[in-house]
Length: 255
Length: 222
Image (cartoon, rainbow over all chains, first blue to last red; front, side, top):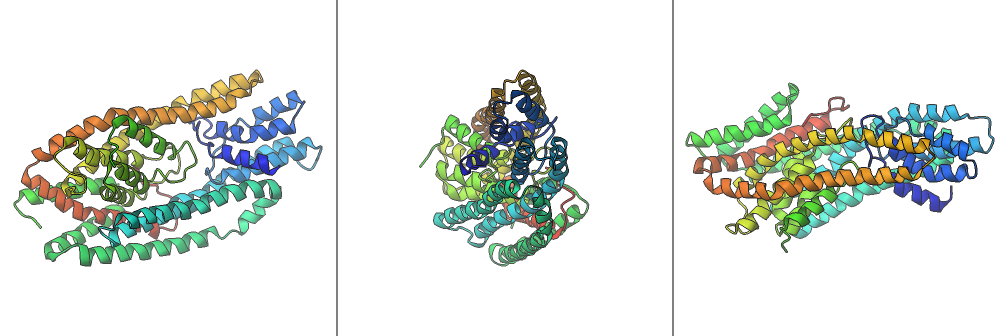
């Protein structure tokens, strides 16, 4: 894969979910990503191209950032098969695709959606809380840093996924198995908890004043933990706190 | 700087909304970013970032795993426009001296619309199944141009849905906030002020719960 076409496929991979559907999830997006390569591989072989396009229009569902590994791998294996290599068959490409999509989705969900994204967002939220009426420059800089830090990992994973998925072919499976994702997730989570504790302490001591406010806040925290243990939605807690606050004010009391 | 033009804002918001699912996922659609951008353009960055921070933290556990991500982006952009843009239109308030009760009112009104949008999104993604069949039919005839067209059409539909949604709701919602705010009794107003101070507790519990769990097998519904 030439660098030029790699950039082209990378650009296309940003649209993986543009035609997200309940029947085959990201299948159209996947096809859109591999199509330029397929057309090149099966140049002047319309029957084989037709066959390949049909094979790659099936169900496809993985984490959007991790999909590039499978896009690169698929292109490499298609090239290999088209080049006459008998060590891999067209059916096996399908098997690789569907067998790896699940585990890659699990890694992406656990790391990006459940850890890295909330962690980066939490950093900005912490700036807002800790600097209270932070001046506009602080807010702008922290938002800029948020997007930069988050996306340097995001874009890096997408780009390297495409490159290594193509370059390492099926060896990528072993490579991924050596990644200590859970360890990384754990470390980021602990950092997240530390930041949350700092926010609570600062808010409790400096932003709230008086026994009534602090008492109510502590009660709200306790109620929240109780509801969370009971797996009741945070939306319920949100509206509950508003209703209780308004009723409290109606009773003639105020902070 | 004030761009409280409904169409301009619906256009901008729906572009940001593409980031949720359809294009790239760079997180410019996260409440903290989207609400800040909207707040800045409306002339009140601080209120925007505050709305974004509250929604970001309280609904931090809502992650786009599985079928359809609940739309906190929609809630935060609606709340920001209603709160700041509405204040500019109402003329009674100057952005920058936003009352906490108005911020609270805008958020509590915007959350249900985020849920409505989520339902619309599910219908939309069911409709997208017809794109799959369209692609199948054309591919059968060896007409591969349909692949890029389907992707482009898919993204356009995601954009259009959001554009219409925002276009319809920005103005009436701002009017409603403007109408309700002065109509609120003193007790309700001070109740909302109290709630504004307590809501971070909900966010802290949500964030703590998210980061303290080793696995995220239970994805929080909206």
